[in-house]
Length: 500
Image (tube, rainbow, N blue to C red; front, side, top):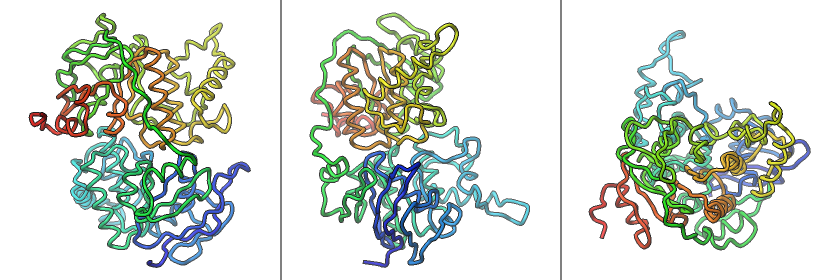
């Protein structure tokens, strides 16, 4: 085994007297792809924030290239060659792609002038290497979530890093984009770059990583070569118990449609989309990233302008020109990018939960904080939301718990139709099961669900029927024995004529 690039001895971290990471001892070898897994709140993010200097350890010692690091900070980490691809995007929306990639490390012609031509060309080279169709001059707020992820990856590899930390880099990428990323990771590893790879996708961890470390409740659980441990064993170690069925028993919907979409189009992103949603049904929406699934959902709820077609709810035509009108018509939406559009991280939990249902809590022209807290306590208990206190800010919660708060916020509007867009993005296997069971309880109560996911296993395991999209069009609606990975991909890739 090569010389260790990173070594930790008895690393521990406390916040306000609460120990969130305890006694972590590990060597991460030079040129290794090192997997790090655990449930949300297991200590993974705390561990990597100690490595990249965002946090200082409460106890223990940290070594980099054999030298003890007394006080790491993000600037020093960057100088040492430590780069991080964060789980939540750290991009400036109003800047162009190339400006984000070189922000703070711009190339200059001289002391006064930036070398924009060189930065744009380097950005083109990076995007070509990532096989990403992104222009250096695209604005961040005008590109898709998947493209933003590629920009984050490009930022991290733009410089000669010795240690590259990847936190959930594939959650919004297509299978082809993941293959490109994995090929790049192997090339970097062959060049001696060490990669710490954090993911809830255990199949990917097993495929790409040399070794995998499991954390649970801030404690070290296991460190093994990936060829000596199965995905099932990893999942069991993460949660500390045997995991059985991932998906709940499917509920049989009623036949009457609660939602009918006829010939819906918007500004070129969705064309002539028609489908119906039955009462108590889970209708899955599959397709490659960029197929138009999110754009269709956003058109239905009024974020995007509808240019053609009609929407009927329980047989009655509705004009839904804004999210508020969608809520008033009984439609709830859980967005794909929770931090950008789903929650306000510097707000407390109760204020997030009542964001769009605030009128329920107004008494005598004032907001009843007592009622807000009562509802919040009920939801915390019902959905097992882990919070340090009822008035905690969302930024202090793990990704899975933030997702639960975002979900509860929409549920508090008492919807009849619930649209979930990538509801398990960036959350652990146990939190995924909680959300799957929650969705199942919704449909058992008569609520109808549109379920958008890039994970075919989730689409197949959760859906009564599956609508497949490609290039803004619905190319097929599958049911029963037709719902297979092969047939979904035929429709998603334009090969549906081969389906037999």
